[in-house]
Length: 209
View 1: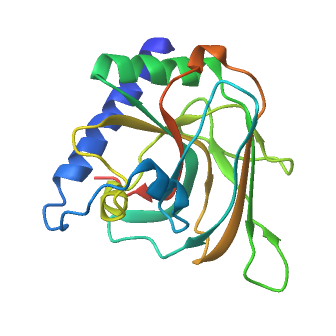
View 2 (view 1 turned 60 degrees about the vertical axis):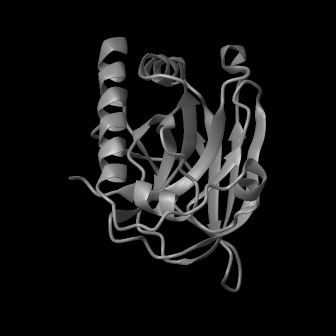
């Protein structure tokens, strides 16, 4: 299973590189500083977060625009991890996927008369099955996901040459544009992840090639 996961992550990484390379028409956008990225409230967005301790890593409002031309309408809620080389990023992804990273994820639309709960789904162990997330929002871990790199680059959230992978807690299927509230709480300690560079990330799923 470990070998399969590593191959899956490596393949996802190659797809991500392909997405970035296939968008030469996108004008160069200055990469946001961590402080600027943490202040962004429009999807796609990121927040620098620790993964080693239980607790709330996101409790924020954001605006959701329509998906870009190279994105599906499925919204990914997950983490982005970084490492200095391919071997390290695969190893870190495997540690997180195989070790589990249980979390409680809650998404609400808040621009109407009252908050509206948004149903979420997660990817099953076979990477094909779509499993509804229970009403309490608890997800057992993360799975590799392909996030739209073009929208990330246009928002200044993707550094040239950076090696990263996106791992999804959950997906929202076709949420309409609007104003939303997101809360993500890690449920267990993971001391082996102390000091590992990670960000909460919210963005649209990339279209398959």
